[in-house]
Image (cartoon, rainbow, N blue to C red; front, side, top):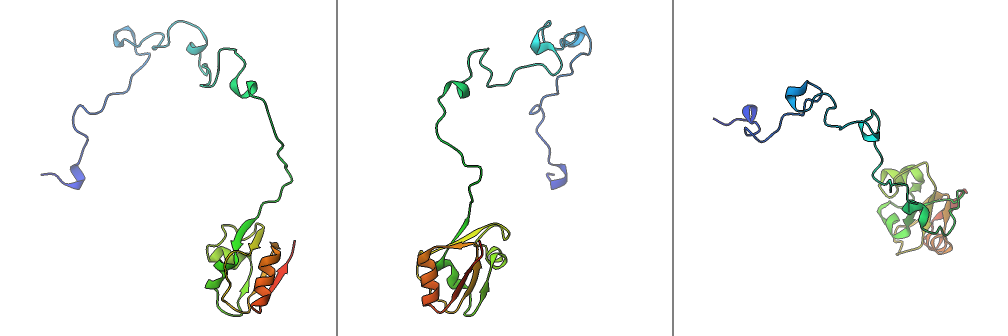
Length: 149
């Protein structure tokens, strides 16, 4: 009878592992299927999949363009329409936004953008940055935005 405790893999469905270096009778003795000498026969030997036999590699042949600014500031973005879920007179900061699932990290920079309509009144919001349209929409609804850069 088939039960959860005796379910097994059908016979012949799995193969035994190759037991290398177990004498000439095993078929994989002595060199263990590695052939004689050479880079691929050594321990730790072998070449990475992207090696092109000494030819100039693809990532070095392709021309490089552009510039990456290592000092750029990235922001987590929240639209004002997402703030409608909060009650009137609510104090909103990074921790509150992270708890609500609007941003992933409470301790990273947050920016409020002005997309959508704000129906909730009187919100006090503390963020790192806010667009002019977002600030004007929040203040028009009777709220306040504190930007601490």
